[in-house]
Image (cartoon, rainbow, N blue to C red):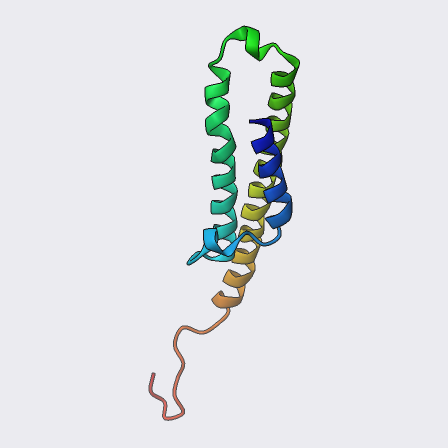
Length: 114
């Protein structure tokens, strides 16, 4: 499981600027990045749930403690990335909303008709 965590961490570091197209196809950029991030999060949390159900003697080993630390750090990084993308989306929506609200809904034609 520790090896899988390192693979996931490498994937995140490689693609965090531009998530892979096959996972974000037909999605807007922010939604695609969030979907990709949540997929990575579930990829590491499902095995961790099973790992936590193991015997206490196994969980007290140094290797297990290291895996828990790495997993917690990766989850925190993914959560921070998700929060950053949501805030970015909020700023973009606010800016485009302000611009669109300034546009007229109806224009009067040169002939005076609506």
